[in-house]
Image (cartoon, rainbow, N blue to C red; front, side, top):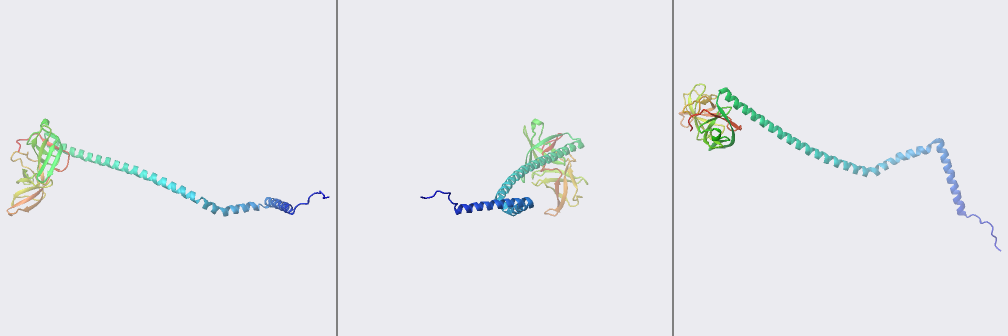
Amino acid sequence: MPSYGSASPRPSDVAGTLRLLAYLALAVALIVLDHRGGWLSQARQQATVLAQPLWWLAGLPSRIGDALGDNATTRARLAEENRTLRNALLLSGARVSRLQTAAAENERLRGLLGAARRGGLDVQLAPILDIDLDPTRQRLVLDAGSNDGVRAGQSVIDAGGLVGQVIAVRPDNATVLLLTDPDHAVPVMVARTGVRLVAYGKGRSGTLELANIPLSADVRVGDAVITSGIGGRFPAGFPVGTVTALHPDDSHAFLVGDLTPAAQLDRGRDVLLLREQGVGP
């Protein structure tokens, strides 16, 4: 009959128990040694130092993504700021240019009114509505007409000198024939010597011509030329221009002079009309 005594332990259970006891003993020994010498803490610190490059590499993609995102945001913000600054700069430049233009125009107006006061002239200020500087047609259209008292034949001046004369008048505007028109001629004289000549238009806003100057006439480059008053078309004494060159004509019997107009025929927005004017052209 079989016996039912206690079963003997299996070899695998004994080995497992021994390993567990060995691990516990090792753990107790490590705890005691770490408590006394702290060498496990030092080992952990060294392991942490050694693992830092790995952590840095692991976090590199995230940092690169963040940096790219920040750079894109910064570039977009800078581009927007640059656009705003450029617009502000353009607006400021336009304002400064407008102020400079207004200042220059005010200076010209002061020059016009100053010339009228200095000469004790009875004048009327007239805005320029349009200008035609075609070589065959040199005209101004004024924003003033018969309703404003403008009459045909009135002399037109600016702060520099004679501009021309009114040749046509309508209720709201008037046409001025400029000195430089090819069909225009004005009796003049040299201010220094009193030599009487005629200045002709040449179809260019910057040049007049003194024709048929006698070879014996005392006319020099740099002489000022003024209206002589002969013929009654223009009052005497108004500046017409300055002699800039003298040369013989085709026949070599006379001299021809180039004359730079005293008036600023190609600029300004206003002119003066002389109220006291005789017969028209």
